[in-house]
Each structure stands twice: as C-alpha cells, then as structure tokens.
Length: 379
Image (cartoon, rainbow, N blue to C red):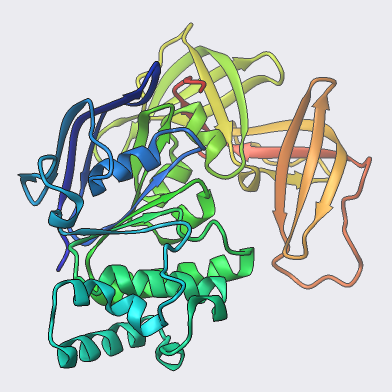
C-alpha cells in the first residue's frame, strides 16, 4: 500500500456560535476508500479542510502515519485535494494544468513530460493533452483535476464532493473511474459526499455524520443493513421507521460471535404488535425505534399461509404503485395515519402487466430477522 493512515482525535471546530464539529474521532486505514457522508451542514467538508490544512481546529489532533500534521502547511502534509469546481487554470492546456505542480518543483522537462504522459494515461485523457479546459466536458475536467492532484504522488487524496456538478449518468461513470484509479494506485482516498448511493457504491468504509457528530462508521453493508440510529436508517436509502415500546424479550439462540440473539415484541401505536430479533440489550418497557427496509417486505393479494410465529403480517390498501421497470414501489396504507413503502423486484418476464394495482387490498409481511431496532437520535 502506498497510502497513509489518517487518525483524527477529539477534533472540534466552531464558527461563532455554530459548532461544525464536536469532538470527532476517526481511524482511516492505509489505502482505504473512506467516505464522509451526511447532509449539508453536517461538518464533513470542514473535517476534510482540517485534514488538508485549509482550516485549523479549535481542539484535537490530526495525524498522518502517526505524525501530528496540524503545525504543517497544506503543501507539507503529503495530501492533495480535488475540489468540486475543478480549480483548473483556464489559460493552460490539459498538459500544462497537470504539469503545474511539477513545474513548481522545477523538475527537468524530460521528467515532467514522462510523468504527465503517465498520469494522463491513467485518467484516459492522452488524446486531449493540447486542449484548454473550456473545450472539455465536465467529466473530462474532473479527470484533469484528479490527474493534477495525483501527479505529486500524495499518500492521501482528499475529494470534496467532486462529482456533484455532473449529471447522473456521468456521475455514475466517474464513480467507476474513481474506483478504478484508487484500485490502481492504492493510496488513501477520503471522499466527501451527501449522496448515499455514491458512498455505498465505492467505499471500503463510511462515516455517517450529522450536526458535527459521527453517528456510525462501518462498511456499506453494515451501514445499510445494521444502522446504529434512526437518523442513519432514514438517511441511507429508504426505510419504514416507527417508534414503539418493548413489551417482552426472550433469548432464542446464540449468535455466531457467542452473543445472545433475542426475540423482542414491540407495541407500535400505528401498527400494533411487531416481532423483531436483536442482539442489542433491550428491556421490557424501553422505548425504541424500529426500522424495516421496503425491499425486505413481501406484498401479495392473498394472506400468507405461513404458520411461522416470526412473520409479521398486516392488511392494507395500495395507495400508489410506482413502476420503474426493474421494480415497483408500492405505498400501502395500513391505517388512516400509516403508510408503508414496499419494493417488489421484477426478476421474471411478464407480458400480462402487474398483478397488484392501485386500490387493491393486499397483505404485507416480513420476517422478524429483517426488521431492526435502532437508537432514537433525531437530527
């Protein structure tokens, strides 16, 4: 691995009365593609700028490979930043934009030519070396900015919402390109985004942030399947979220790590009794938040005939079916005040049209294993 470990300890930052970061701590591993994910104003860009050296924290330490870099200026930190607005020199060619950091170092022309050619090849822009930035597409400009940031061979590349100015299809293409570049050069990427799909698509791990706090750090699978708080459950993808009270708890088995797997019965005012398995230490009488992802819920016109005690079943009416080709999203009203989102994937060919339509009476069901109890922490 060519990258560096980045350690953030107790970092806080305020702008007047606004607390942008509150005692943040993170361990980013060498060579990781690590994303800082959260809504606008959550502190992710402020944290990136502190790592880069463009902001100074009020408290805390930032270490790269065990060395505190806070006393160092940005150009001494072995990190480079790719900005949202590209920050290219409009009067210089693609070649000269990429060569600029090397010319500042006064490297020999032959070395500059060799290295620029290498990095233009990496970002697949060799044929555009003589063009000015105005002649390039948004995706091409972003690739020039990436090549310029990488040519100094930093151990950490900081990316501040680098794809937000691009259209959806180009953004998806550039995500694949970024992942390819990361895999090829092997340095540490720290990527700031508010887009959940971007973070889930390319990250080794993700830190979900809200109001200056880090709420959860984990792999994309852990963040999506096992959200730590109700905010994370709502922010990552779509979910159905309810608050309820634990009525009973019983141990049903031991988990793979030796932990107790519990079956909890919740009383949720909007929907009644719900069963959910959990490894968290929940107790009768405790108020909790319960989440179930739309794709985990089955929908049918007939009541499920299963006799399993761990299946939750509700009757409802389809308020709105939204067909998207590969799937249909149903909004199913189960009471005057409660609507579930249910996603049905279309895995098989059908020439007869949908079997469930608007205003149909339906049943929705899910296993106790597919629901999740999360900490209640509203933004």
